[in-house]
Image 1 (spheres, rainbow, N blue to C red):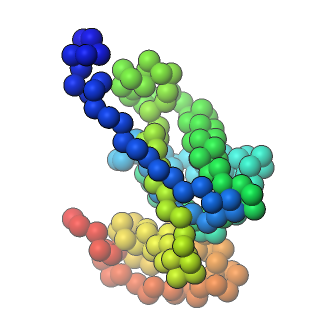
Image 2 (cartoon, one colour; image 1 turned 30 degrees about the horizontal axis):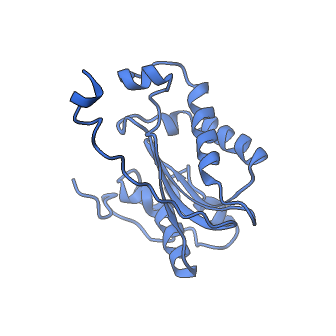
Length: 188
């Protein structure tokens, strides 16, 4: 098929606009390509190592993070004068993917580009505006495993900065109580 005959070829690309605020604070959602996979918790040590290696060369503060089987949420603050969160995510994602065995199915497009089929290409970010916005997004990270029905209590999910925040006295151990069925606003 020639480019002129391909209807997708003539479709304008979406205009992704990102806020670049040096030293800013952002909330992120990053997803696996195949949302039914559990790679992130199955290889949690590898993900932590990928994050640590990236932080060694491109520092940032992790204000909150939760790792779920197929996606993660994080709140980061970048150093003063630095707004390049994209390079950090690229490095984390590529380090994680390169360390995994090549078992995923690849589309022809990914094959032609030499890409892996581990992560969705992009991520979602939100520039945190104020203290209330910050608190909402940190709490969203912590409650997310309950929201997805993975646990009944926030403290029962092991892959969360919630435990660090409890040790620091920021949150009580029983914060958010218990959801008897693990459901928290998710549709069936």
